[in-house]
Amino acid sequence: MLEETQAETPGVRRAVSALNRSGGWPQELIDYADGIRAMKALPPSDPLSLTYQAAIHGRNGEWAREHPDWDWCQHQSWFFLPWHRMYLLQFERIIGHLIHKPEWRLPYWDYTAVDEARWVLPTEFADPAADDNALWVDGRSSAPLPPDHRDPTTALEAPVFATEGAGFNFGSGMIAAPAQFGTAGETGALEGSPHNVIHMDVGGHMSDPTAAPLDPVFWLHHANVDRLWEVWLSQGEPRTNPTDASWLDTEFRFPDPSGDHVTWRVRDVLDTAALGYVYDDVAPPLTGVEDDRRGIAATVMTRQPQEPEVVGASDGPVSLEAGSSALIRMEEPRKRRGLHAGVGAEDAEDDVFLRVEGVQGTNVGVGVYGVYVGVPDGAAATAHPELKAGLLSTFGLEASSRGDGHGITQSFKITEIARALRAEGRWDPTALRVTFETETPGRALADGAENDVTAARVSVYYA
Ligand code: C2O
Image (spheres, rainbow, N blue to C red):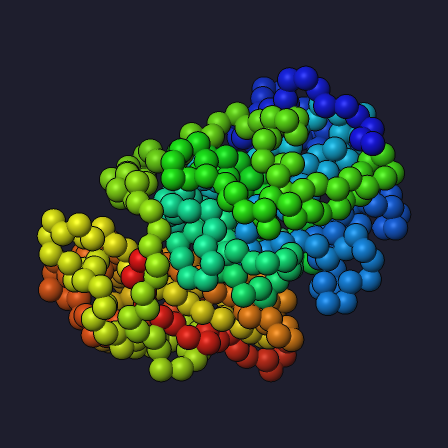
């Protein structure tokens, strides 16, 4: 069925920064640019064309699917990682087929490395002057990624792959059947950040799910996201893939270079070597600037998830403007846990989470929000980086808000912030203020339109 048979030894997907540049552009990127040019030269009706491939990710939305191959990207659910793995694999095969190098492997953008030089677009992608540079597209931001935007430490700490409902998970929430956007599932730690955040930070095509795959850097970003799945697993127990049949047996169909289609079940794509590729490095990046967080990662690593207990929520919807805030009234948890437990108590390691629920918007004027907790009255949140709970990106927000879409829901671990506040006598167990700031601007709004991003509720829970 597949045109090219797998090489016996899997090919290596390498960090883009590690490619050999002694003779100018690395061969892998010369090949990649040739492949992109070949995809662009095909008519849009050809399944191997770049336009068609981007439509597989998103075009009109699954509610208005024009073609059975289109509008399949999986977001906000535990299908996010396996679907994008399949999508990348087919793309890699298409490039290899078009340039007659089936051994070609997609490099990954290693912005997760501690070396700041990697936090900018790889130079070959950023040079509009290079003659007919197929790796360049207009409209991107050239700013380096801010340190916490590319930091995968929190995502790698997540103890479980998926949760049903609220929970600190790595691979996004459990849902019963495939869905593109606006699922009732929780956006997982990796999908939220760095994945969604980097889409908005790069901007241009990357900020729009119906155009993102037209930017050649999309595929290198997703290769890194796919690699981080392997990094997360490499940390070992309790980090494992789900064993639920409803995940393992779900299948997706993609056009293949053979002219036919290939159908993958999730269970078919869990071993990358069997699919013909491995990564050059799957060690957790817990060194250098992240050294001070090593201890935190180590304590969380052995914990099993617990049933979340909601202790408070905002009175109603919270509009997300730069500097907007809401007060969350909290009750004593029914179980003596987390911050309420005595030192040395068995449950002292319970975590506290802030959950931003059902974020929706039709005029989305912000790309990435910084989410802060416990900012003192009258103070600017941005003057308190130590109170930053995390990042909320609006990638896919319009699609998630459409019709009966549930918007975006995301949890932020605030255990360390709460402990630090408590140690300073500044933790109020009855009320917590949450504040939103703009970190990355959104796309330009239509004339006269104002940002209308709103969270249905913001809550606090222990788990
Ligand atoms: Cu389906 Cu990074 O997007």
